[in-house]
Picture 1 (cartoon, rainbow, N blue to C red):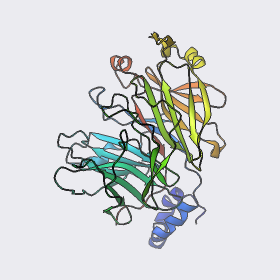
Picture 2: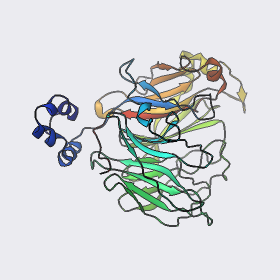
Picture 3: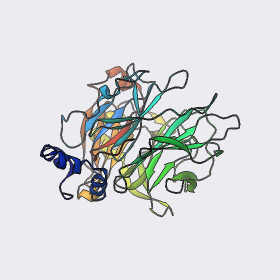
Picture 4: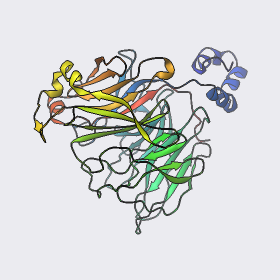
Length: 391
């Protein structure tokens, strides 16, 4: 039975008898099945607009990468019980098929509900509140899930405000269903705000603050940070070879795919960009792919429709939505790029490109042509096995 795909077990076989159902849904059986899993394959993207763009920024759009017209597995109705606003669901992070979400993140009182959502099974877990006292609140900064090792997941939270500017780390585990204190009184360096956490290699990673338009101090030249989930301690890893100063005319992509950690910096005045990958021993970043934008712009001239000079260089309207690695499946890897009005797939092997989503159909043309590329947020959809929710 362990060799039968889990979803096939759950469809016809679960109705055979109560004994079969009990065996298939037993946590020990599920954990053994997880450990025999092949690599997880991304088959779609969830995309959201930033909250300052448009009148309905919270819609979660689904872009299938394999079969066109595949319905979205994301069900907003799953959040209907939320007391703040179930229609205002924001995805904060994705990890091996699970989504870390929250509602009402821009509540003037700083209150919100946190969730871990599995769109494959439509299972939703509400994270319990953690009362830290007056003047403090817990920000959700990371979701850690590795189905090849465990059916349980963890969520990292950090205190958002303290009088001494120090932060305390807390860990939520689906195994216990509770929060507990982890790292106490960490004082982050300037520019470190624990945004864009990426789980890779058993660790949660954060870059220093590279968010365009941020009011925070300029990033220092210090190394970036990761949180070792097993040992629960912070350590450093090398800064990627990208610009240290902040600029509003660039986008930054920091994600994991097929157990590879990537950073991509796209400056609008550049004619090319590099895809950097971190070595598994953290010794260095290296260039995995080099992308020439000029041939792409010839296929999609809208990239240069409003072409002008910026520091004596041509302007390309382009941003990176996702890098889909598929070497484990003996398929071509590709980039998903955002250009004005479209999301396109760029094959990293044969350099071909095609439209995978014309979002001018969903957004007004006024909106499409008046926001800078690189503002959409995308998370990979991975059809995963059911994880273990709180008891």
